[in-house]
Length: 438
Image (cartoon, rainbow, N blue to C red; front, top):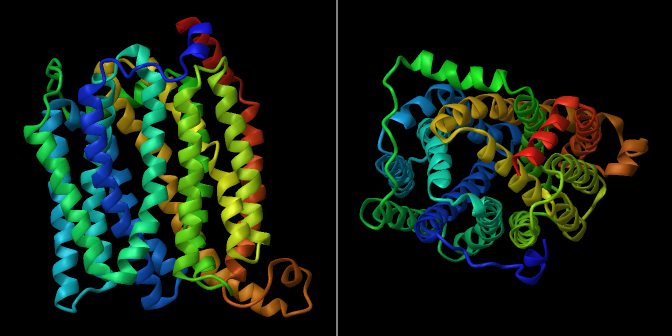
């Protein structure tokens, strides 16, 4: 412990290959996030509907969740470096298709739905492979620090993508955002094919996909603490995706909102995520990872949604984003470390694939539910209540007030989920296992 206090930033020994792959992959992720942000703005401007915009994410996640249960088995069989390069190349081709349709004036929402679905299929394969690659390239004594670096890269993407996308949209238009995305993807693919080598791994036994996928599911069923942790995050993902569906509808519609306001809120989210990631990277391993996960999510759920519901301007929305996201990297890093240290490396692709299906199937449901509730329930309800109603005084009126109502509802729902799982004894058994492993 004293050594950690004297050296809060020990050298990143043994991480050269990881750092090369991590930096280029996250540059590509930044380009993709910028394109996604720009297309969300474009789609909302076309229709003005929260549900229509939310369907962009639904089309990405449905095939992702459907294929994930089998994707880990495929990832175990295939060469991991070439698999990642193949998936990045496919993503670049779909982005190129968007650019071609835009240049010819034929881009429509259904094109984006279809291309997002195809990208979701590729992401289902790439994600578990990427998780295994991180494990292969990370010495055990650097797991906590690498978890912090992964959170750091996510926060940088969240911070920079709306700022850069908004700037390029304003100066050069949607085409410039897409060209930047293509350039970063080319850098990532080139690095994978010609810049790095991965450690050799024993070839996986070629068994039927259903049997191989079942092995990942059975491992989770035999690890009740890990399973309950995943179900906890599945419930949080349901609420978080409802938040994501409602956020553009509220910020783009409310007085004082607009594209710049949405970019500032997203940037505040990224800035908070960045600060939290730096903190995680510097701190030593906590005594209780489970307690950190529960407490971080409770703080996040009890602050941001409430401030977004009650706030009336960009400043308070940004403040809510900071409070909601500051501790998320700490939660993510400790969950990642728990799973990475507990799942045998030869099983990780299959287990992560099963985890993705269980943990992420609620995301498309949340986007659909959130968009439907804003358009069909909350906005009409706020119109019917009229100017003298208590909810109108609390949340305001006009377009966007229905999204604010949804934020109020999910604030209480998030707290209830956190308190429920906080009393799950299977989660606390993970704390005892973590101490014995260390």
